[in-house]
Image 1 (cartoon, rainbow, N blue to C red):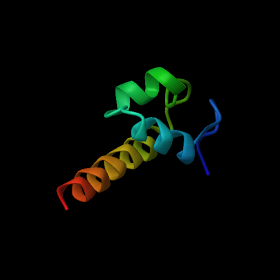
Image 2 (image 1 turned 90 degrees about the vertical axis):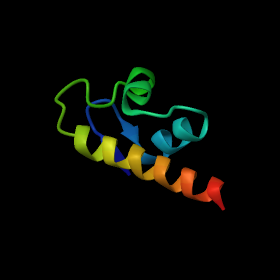
Image 3 (image 1 turned 30 degrees about the horizontal axis):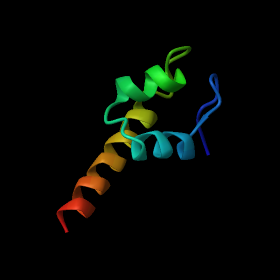
Image 4 (image 1 turned 60 degrees about the horizontal axis):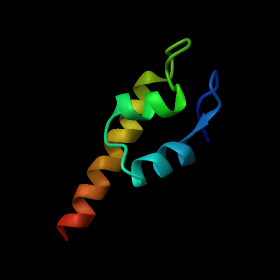
Length: 62
C-alpha cells in the first residue's frame, strides 16, 4: 500500500528499511523522501515506523 503518493513510497519499502536498520522517521525520510513534498503522509509514515519499532523490540525481548 502506498504511504506517500507524492514520492511513491510503500509500506513494504518502509518495513524493509526498518528491517535493514533505519530506526526513526528521519532516517526513513532521508532514504525515501517520504513526507518531504506535501507532508500529508507524515503521520501515517511515522505511526508505521513506530509500529515496526515496537513490534521488533517486543519480538527481540521474547
